[in-house]
Length: 416
Image 1 (tube, rainbow, N blue to C red):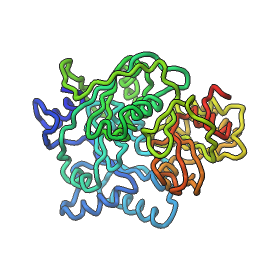
Image 2: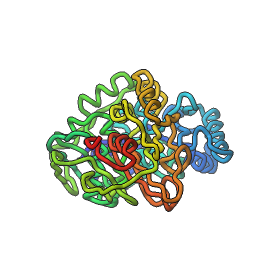
Image 3: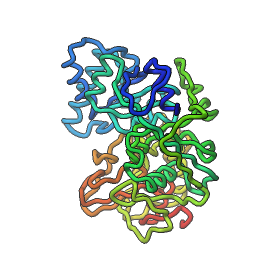
Image 4: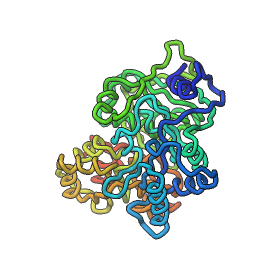
C-alpha cells in the first residue's frame, strides 16, 4: 500500500484498502472556519444529537474575514464562538489566532499518521506532517462532528520523485507550481500525491507545507510526505499526544510515477487565471504590478517572511505599488518582530497586517480594483479571486513577490 492507503486502512480498522473502495474512516481531527463552520453547525443541529463526538478533536478558527470586516462576518464568527462555548470545542480568538493551516501544525494539533478533515479545500496542508488530510463539504463536517467518522472513497496514489538540488531563490512554491504546470489542474484528480526524492529530503518543513497546501490545485484529494528527521524535530516540542508514523510499502502500487530533475528549475510564476499557467521567470516580459501580497496559508510562515525581509532590507517598495505582508499566525508575527523583520518591512514601506486570510479570497485587507495586477504568494489566481473580475493575480514565491514590489514589475530577485 501507498502511504495514504496505510493511514486509511489503519483508521478503517482494515488490514488493507485499495483505490476505489468505499470505507468508513475514523477521524483524529475535524476543522472548520468562519465561512464553513456556520453551515456545519446548522446541519449538526438537524442531526438531532446534543454533543459533538469529542470536543478535543474539533477545532474552529475564525480566519477568513477576521478581524471581522462587517456585520455579516461578525455574525458568522459569533455563531461559531457560541457553538464552541456550548460544546467545549477548541477554538482560537483574535489575539491568539492565525490562519488555520498555519496555526494547527504550529499548535501541535495535527500529528503524523492522523486523518484530518476540514471544511476548507487547503486542509491538505497537513500532509507535510505525514498525515492524511483533506477538505470536505460542511455537511460532511457536521456528520463527522456528530460521529467521529467519515465515509469516503480510497484515492489512488501518484508518486512524484524530485531529483537534484534546488537553485537559488527556488523553493517549495516553485516546485509545486512547476508540477501543476506540467500535469494541469486536474492532473491528480481525486488522487493522493506522494512527494519523494532527494530534493524533497532537503526541503524545509515550511517548504513542504507550501507544496502540500497546493496539492488541491492539481485536483488532488491529499498531498503527503514521509516522516523524516525534519518532521520529527518539528513536532518534538509540539506533540502532546501519541502518534504513529506510517511508511509506504516497498512494493506499493501507484497509478503513476513521475520523475522531475529540479536542478534547472527557475523561480516559477503562474500567470492569470490558473495555477497551471506556470512559467519560468525568465520567460516573462515586463509585467507591471499594483500590489504585492506576501502571506496566506501557502506562504505566511516565518521562513517566507525571512526570505521577503532579506530582499526588502535597505530598499523601498516602488511608489506605485502597495506591498502587504500578513504573518500566518500570532506566533509567526511575534517571531518576525523579535527577529527584526517587521521593522525591515515598515522601513521599506510595507503594510503589515494582523493574521488573516483576508485578500487571498478577495475578502478584505487588500482587495483588487478593476484593471489592477497583484503578484501574490497565495494559492489561487482564478478570475475575481482577489477582487474585481477585471483584476489579475500572478502567483509566485516570497522572494519574487518582494523583489517585484521594489521594481514595480515582476522580476527575479537576481535582477535587483
